Amino acid sequence: MWIDEYIKSAAELTFKDGSKEYTCGVACMLREIEDAGGISEFESVKVHDWVSGKLVDAETATYVIGSKVIPDMVPNYIAFANRDEAEAFAAKEGGDVIDFNIAYEDVSPVGTTAPFRIRTAVTPGEGNFSLGMVYGYTQKDHVKAGSNSTEPYDFIHGNKAQPRTPEESQGHSQAIIANYSPTDNLALFINVPWFERRQGKAR
Image 1: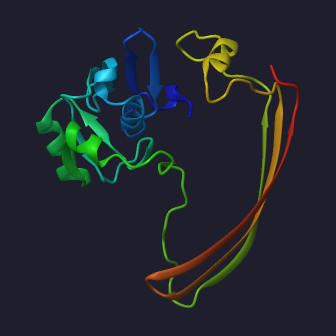
Image 2: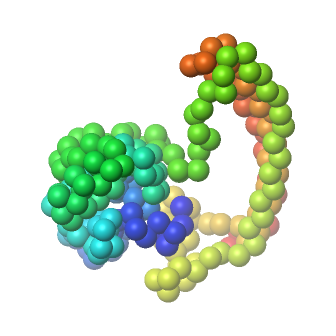
């Protein structure tokens, strides 16, 4: 995910060798800590306070999870520098107020988060049936440069998860979808996707 778009919920992890890792939100930050062997493996871990936007220490921050606000990922942890502000937020938007230790113990396994742009789970009503087809096209022909002035080439080759990237990529995605609701509270949804991709030479 493009971190600059999620700066209000983004986190900054500084390793003991001075290198830094950024995440789009608290959920990914917690798993980065878990993968590294615990928070003691870092020089510092900071999160953005939801109210002021300032970076604060992750261990002393207070978190709200399960509110109606989903800024980056689900589960939707939101960090606050001040517990009173976290409680006021939860009173208005819902969710539970927790501290860092509870959040860290509660962190879900890698791979279970999802961007907030997921399909909303709403049952359309008893007896409703729908059938449709979806088509999408994507093209990437430019590596976006971030506000931290990092060169795209240096970033790509320094990222262990993505050591190389194509200069150009085209994707065609299609899906047949079907939905049937036997009751008002239950919907059966089937999505049969297929995907075609063409890539130019890697840089």
